[in-house]
Length: 186
Image 1 (cartoon, rainbow, N blue to C red):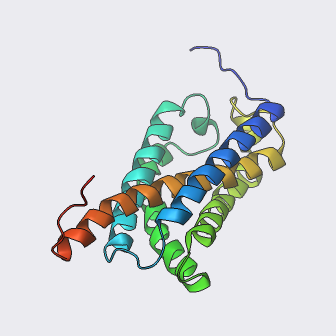
Image 2 (image 1 turned 60 degrees about the horizontal axis):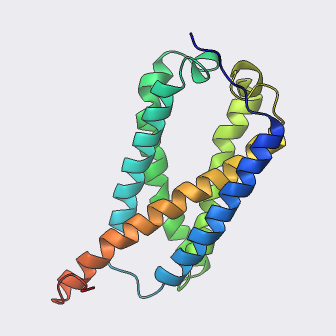
């Protein structure tokens, strides 16, 4: 088995800074692009892209990092269940969009990303305090809980801004085609 390189707390804070910068840049782009009036199919596209994204991400993570991380803190059946958990997270995106639209009806990007980032907390808190992730997982052994939790918020905000931008790009041509305009020209 190859030697596992552990991440340090300082590296985790650096990764948080990078993720935060990406979220700000992509969040600004999304705030400019994703505003009322919204494509009618945006919620459906958001649902589908979210499910595909999180199912793929969780499935990949479970198979790639099982021996070096997750296998130490999760039961064996969790490896197979990971994509299904990803489906649940993808479904939650619909609820996040609904709540964000209630908070800021014409510019819901910021509340959507904040809510999406906060969605990381239950899973990360459970992993850190309920399953001993920071002690059992060799990759993150010894980092501070604060650095892991703050990184997780920006990590998930990054995931959700990517999902939102892709869903909007998919839904926009649908909306144009439905109005009889055809796909947008370049």
